[in-house]
Length: 404
Image 1 (tube, rainbow, N blue to C red):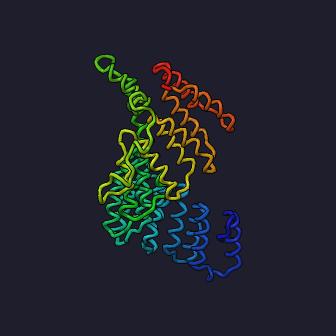
Image 2 (cartoon, rainbow, N blue to C red; image 1 turned 135 degrees about the horizontal axis):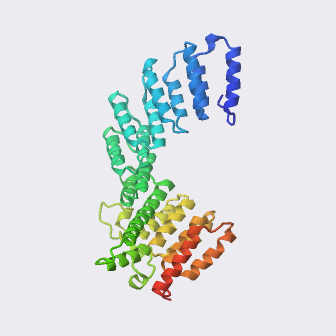
C-alpha cells in the first residue's frame, strides 16, 4: 500500500482484491488503518473517508489512528470543513481525540490561515487534558502568518514556555515568518537573536532569509505610504514636505553628497568583538544603525557564510533589494556578482533589484547595460525592468550626473 509512486487507482485495485480474497474476519482495524493512511498520504480525502465508512459498516471499531489519517488527508487541499466534521464524529464512536488528532487539525487550520480558530482549538485541547506538543504550537503559530498576527504569535510562544515546552527551530522560524509577513523587521531580528542567546538554537537559511525579507517588506510598505501621501499631497502649506518625502521614497538613505557615498559594513556598525557590553549578545543585529538597514542585511548575509549556511537565490534577491533601497549601490552590485560563485543563476528579480539600485542614484547608463544583458541570461525584461530604467532617467534629470 505504501510503495512509492503507486497511485490511488493502484490502491483501489489492491484494496478491492484484498476484500474479495480475504475472509471478513481478517478485515481488522490494522488493515483498514493501513488503507486509510495510504489514501491520506496521496491526499485522496474522498477515498480515505469512504474507507472509514466501509470500516464502520463492517462493524470494525475505528481507532484514533484511522480518524487522524483522514484528518491528515484534508491538509493538502485545506479542507477545513471536512476536518471539523471528522473531529466531531470521533466522540460518536467513543474515540477520544489525542495529541496527534489536535495537532493534525491545527495543521489544517495552519494551511488555511484560521489563526483565531486555531488558538481556540489549542485552548480546547488543554481544557480536555491533552498536553500540546511542539507540533501543535508550531502549527498554531504558523497559522498567524497569513494575517501577520505578531501579537497572537508572541502570546502562543509565552503559553508554550509556560507549559514547560522548549521552542525548536521550527517554532522560531514560524515566529520570524509571522513577523516577515507583517513587515515587523525588529521583531524578526529579536527572535533571530533569541534563537542563539536564549534557546541555544542555530538559525538556518529560512531564519536568515525571512529576516532579510522582513526588512525589505517593511521599507517597501513605508515607501508606498510615502508615495500615497505624495500623490494626495497638500499643495498649500505642505508642498515642501511632500517634495522632501518624494525624494526620500526614492532613496531613504542620505544622498551621496551628504553621506559620502557607499559606506562599508564596518562603518555602519562596530565589529561585534568591540564596543559590546558584558552580557550582550554579539550577534544582536538590532544594534546596527537603525537608519540604514542595509547594514543589518549585509551582516545577516555574511553570517550565513561564517556559519556554513547555504544560500539560495531567495537569500540574494532581498539583500540586493534592501541595498538598493538604501542607496548602497556598490554593495548591491557586489552581492549580485557573488551569485554565480554559489552555483546559482541570477533571475529577473535579481536583475531588476540591481537596476533599482542604479536607478535610485540616477545611474541610467549602468541600468541600460544591465537591461541589455537580461536577454543574454535567457530572460525577458518585464514592465518593472523598463519602469526602473525610466525612473533612472527621471532621477538623473532631477539630480544631474552622479559624482565621480
